[in-house]
Length: 318
Ligand SMILES: NC(=O)C1=CN([C@@H]2O[C@H](COP(=O)(O)OP(=O)(O)OC[C@H]3O[C@@H](n4cnc5c(N)ncnc54)[C@H](O)[C@@H]3O)[C@@H](O)[C@H]2O)C=CC1
Ligand SMILES: O=C(O)C(=O)CO
Image (cartoon, rainbow, N blue to C red; front, side, top):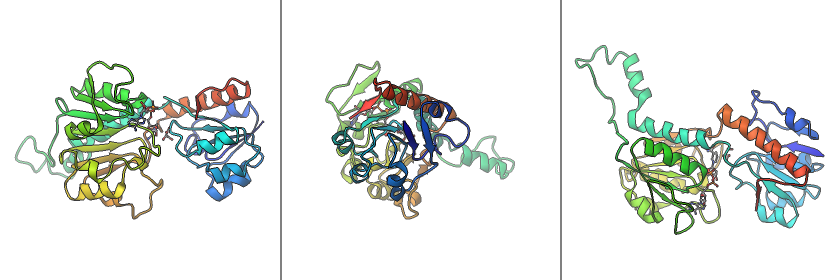
């Protein structure tokens, strides 16, 4: 079996190894692949592994030998699933490998808004405390989370873990999903419709996939439903937001802040309006990238390839 990894660098920048994959077949690993290079590099492959290199219908039509795509991620919005199905190509993803890490980053971002730890520490190191007449001072308002309401859009693996952490902090948890009812009862959590969640939440966190239905579904009309004091978090996919609308709401004080790990285009162009927006914290799509999570991702991705070769595919999508 000829296996081509199109963009292996972010999964394994050098602190993991590909041995498990190399034991399965003839493997070629590219750190990154630009779109025009995909067909040349994958032309002879039976198996292609990709994290964020897109496989569109046009590209797949030019890869007639391809039998299997292993997405090196949970989100698989980069694959044209319909085209893959029509060509008989199986597609798998890696669920749940980063659940704890992503939920942890939600709170890293949220707690930064609550305490501005770095800003306070910088102030102290710069001498402000030594020069202060008081034993305590603040350089920005502080927020206590206990008693505040968090609204989770998407209650899958990451949404549920985020709910647990929020509950441990004394927050009231609202959630919504694609159905009118909760997929399963979760203790202490209230299932509401999207508009109600947007109206009632102090903190809103997105945990649903990017699909044609959810594309840019956080837009001006929905932002207008949110409290002007609300803080929005997106660790799912950038395309869930209309970025211009979110930036405008932040700049006009109709939204208090945004904590973002993902943008529509990654890396972003310098003119992305969110980069200069007021009260925004942006991380470069790192929620998944703890070594612990990447090691789990590697193990499951290799398990997926083995299962496909053994004729018992696992983690199939589409
Ligand atoms: N920033 C990062 O590094 C990472 C981002 N992700 C993103 O997070 C997303 C969620 O991951 P998981 O929780 O593991 O996936 P999951 O599949 O366990 O949960 C997704 C949930 O979203 C719900 N959903 C689907 N359509 C919806 C809609 N229209 N409105 C509200 N909810 C809807 C589903 O019913 C499901 O409960 C992934 O799709 C991926 O895009 C995942 C891992 C790492
Ligand atoms: O697993 C995912 O969906 C990610 O975004 C990380 O690549």
